[in-house]
Length: 134
Image 1 (cartoon, rainbow, N blue to C red):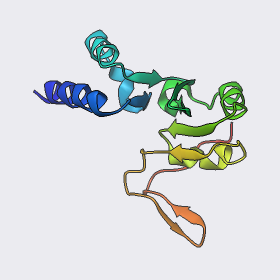
Image 2 (cartoon, helix red, strand yellow):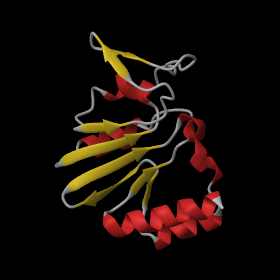
Image 3 (tube, rainbow, N blue to C red):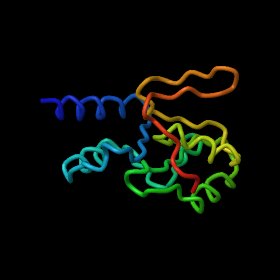
Image 4 (cartoon, rainbow, N blue to C red):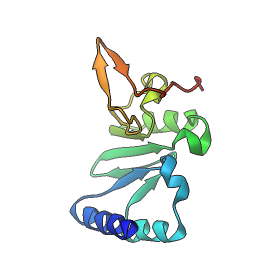
């Protein structure tokens, strides 16, 4: 039943506004049925790729569990495009590697304990460590 609820949510959400997704660690388990539903709902699944919606560029880089590293070639290409750029990046600990790219907004969601900035420094969940610099 959970899957049907997710499908219904995605279908309804895409009727309200365009929906974009990046490949996070749980998207490793997408089935062909899942991909068919995403396609039917016209949801852009971003995997080192981007889409333009109403003059805003949305890019997505996948979870480190999928690729093991950040695709710097994609990031350079994406960040050099003109226009307002939003990057979906599952891992907030990638931010130090991303901050040098001219991207207007970076959205992350993997931080289980929430994200709080104190004195300009991010505090992450226990056990969440920065990956090696790529």
